[in-house]
View (tube, one colour):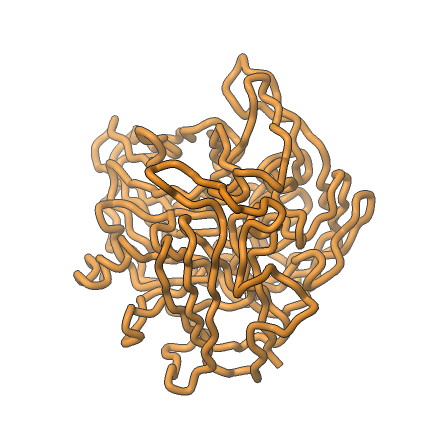
Length: 471
């Protein structure tokens, strides 16, 4: 049954869920992919190449971007749980590429981080990508290459993979909502990428224009009064941390970071929303014609992202929102008394003094430090454990900025401050508020080498990452 969160969990969700983690629906599969995947689908070709699109409304000029098969974001890929995605990725851009899927668990060799889990795909080259997601859920993909991720993502390379449950909850519309942030000038051109900059040593590359599914917001659609919409919300921005507010309809969260959760209503109708974060939200529309429901980014005075207007005859009121089945492959509990414990200490960046940024003493070539250095494959891993070992990691943010981190290949619990319990949802991305420390716990159940990386891509490119090993 849908319920309001208990007071403690509601407080934690509002203040701690990742610590302030802050048109036409893309319902068509990528060209050549069928809704029902065979066990071994034919090999198709997907091309990353320069393209043009109009980011701001006409009469604004088109912007030169990079896109998958000519569109940004790429058309949403849909497969059934247990299916396979198989395609050849051709790189016709000027940068090396890797393709990481946020929310994908499984084999480390398929984690898609160029220079870490596999060689990057060089300009003019191609590589076969074969993915078998073990879980249902909403997955975000964008380029990740050690030292070279900000530009291909900031030029528009991103998309969603939807792995459908074997039994889909009944909804009237399943709507992917991919939010992107663009730094463009008055001539609509994408501004230069300067990695060693004050921006990279502070908040990251914050854009001047937001798009929803590649178009100017808000994305406006119509639906019958009383309709039920499934929103699949994903933040593909390089650095933009925001909050989302739901107005005019009843919103219930059914999944966080690709994993089903006990259903809950967002406190004050708001959710934190940071790069890499995903939510599946059931939105029940008003039951009268001519009403509207919206999703708004709380940036400045508020920026509407999606607007749904009711028209036509009223339909029967929907039943209670579906209660998703827990993922049976994730542990119900983590024996923290048996856990291997590690700590990540994050330091550096600009200082905030009297609401002004102070860059005194900041080395723009190495502005951030993780455990005293930058990410490196030459040293020892953060930890090396046998498969099945429980892990507790303390992430201590000693900087003046919120720090979002993504654990590759695993889903974890956010622990309560006294390590006496955990939140009722799984995550793969957590935000640590400035000058705070949080703890996460998981079972190291996937063999191989895995990154723990900043989802602010300029920080990631400058070495804000570490890695661990599961034997």
